[in-house]
Image 1 (cartoon, rainbow, N blue to C red):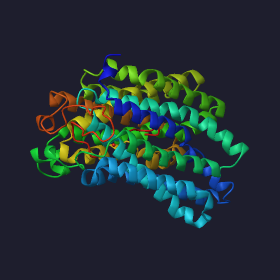
Image 2 (image 1 turned 30 degrees about the horizontal axis):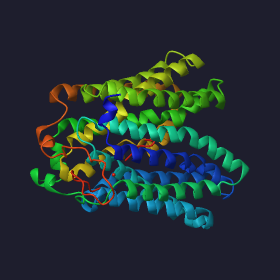
Image 3 (image 1 turned 90 degrees about the vertical axis):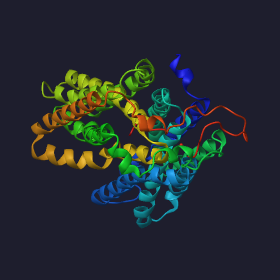
Image 4 (image 1 turned 120 degrees about the horizontal axis):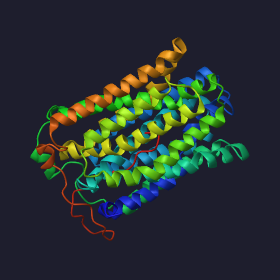
Length: 427
């Protein structure tokens, strides 16, 4: 496709590393089983530790861009990946009490790495090709995650859960090494000429871009709604006579549609208004849960998952690229960090909020989810109509203008680099 030719070679190489890393990044899916099984913790302790680790991941996403703007996104990516990998690889050797420090630390470092990833892609890729670039990286992540859980289950059952942590740790360290190889270190360390064009901190930049201020809370709301599929939705299916096989098949639909559609859709719609695409995507997510008000059979569940997945295809890549396009150069990392943080907040908030509401009033949860999706989507569509264009003038004069070229190691880059890619499917 013509649009994919606009994606720099560096991004394709980074996507290759992401694919390999995501194949082995499955320990989170088995953490509860690991803690309650081999580690002998009760369900309450295991839940507490899992929650604290999830909070570490969210905190890392919110702060990684701040580090990148100051120290360079590439450098922060390498440190975050290395720390996360080394701690995870050491998990089998640690006594159980130390896991309450080790797992949150590893997840915090992983969150920092994720935010730096997004910022580095935004630095490498010029406006006009960022949607495709983020879609390439997400496609690689989704492809790896499609294989990972199956292989992880084989390893855990035939060998040991310990090997999941060793493999993921080595994969994270390997990703750091691969990134260091394919992304040269030369360039600005997160601040450069672009940062002098527009002064002020991140909040001043956000106030100058009211559409971003609308988009960020909308994404936070929709992430809490979207991630109900990983918690209360499975309970809903069980309560209506559908077992884990049905739930697994529905998640397979989600993964398959993402793999088939996300990259082509990003290319086809790359010239369309980003906020309109995002708004429509949020409406589809809300509409997916609205389908559950009509019926509770397998057909309704399939339609629900289809709408939810198409909504994800529309909004996730487009919103990530839009925030990058809006960011002035001196706070690009912080913009990406804010987006990365809100886009994964559902990891901590979705299960407790949805679980409490479902337990108190099962029939109320899906109307609330559908209504929140409509409100979030409507707010973004309204913001898009008010802005009159996808990118502000201030952001236009402060972003890198050319893609990062493919060069031999040691050659000087032609555009500022300073700092790093993707977004795993859990994002």
